[in-house]
Length: 210
Image (cartoon, rainbow, N blue to C red; front, side, top):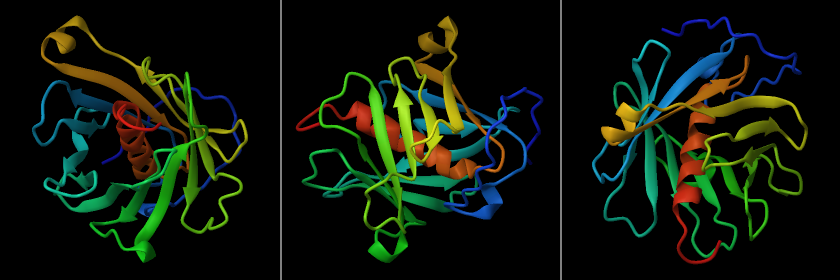
């Protein structure tokens, strides 16, 4: 059960984005914690917790695939989104599909680097209905290394979610990294989690073309 947080936020235009499902939209800000287990190839190395520490989402890998596949699942292991890297694209385009599908008709959105060479993170997000792809529906800017990326609506300055790093010496010692994600009101928080997963994949994959 989601808990309302009392954090104060600057006024922003209301952005209702039921990209994955209206069930993931609430009229108040949602604070999430992402826990990454470093230096491990095991399942469950990426988990998303609510402010009470309960697991809300996990990321699983599809092994023995010709492409990089990841699946976002809920607490009951129901598949929410399947991620797939599109092959032979210079801008590291990732696609997100509903459930376990990779059928084009189930495409939800795609994410790509805004430019070929980047010193800081800048990604463009295109919803499935945006077939021309001339103007992005969301964009992400910031520093992945510092976990300080911000997600904006369209090409505007209206913030829909932002990341903030938080870790302790103990968590690093235990081989875990923690960072927070604040999702603004009326924004699909499962969609934001999906963007964070792709953000990590794009920034971890440093081989080949950018």
